[in-house]
Amino acid sequence: MKRCLIVDDSSVIRKIARRILAGPTMLVAEAESAAEAIDICTHEMPEIVVVDYRLPDMDSIELIGRLAKLDPQRKPDIIFCVCEFEVSLLTRAKRAGASGYLMKPFTRLQLLESFRELDARAAA
Image (cartoon, rainbow, N blue to C red; front, side, top):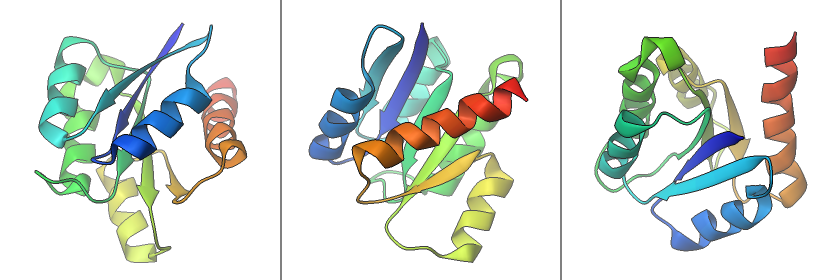
């Protein structure tokens, strides 16, 4: 079973993502802040982390970098959620360790497709 962590200060977004992703093959955890995400990942690193651009307690790019370096043996795939397509921001996220990005608001299909893309890259 894969594990996923949704990091977003919006409880609505976390709840929507959980409803879309949770099932027999995916265990979904939630964090409303970067500090909570780091705590969760320190104890049990998920395979996939979805990080929102705006977090209340830390720059999201910094969080991505920290998560990418937290456990070199088990680096998670990180999906960066943004509201606007800004090349420089996406480039910084990629350099910090993001595997891809997802535009908000997202549909069920878009979220699932971003996970399928990660699976396809891992299988290649």
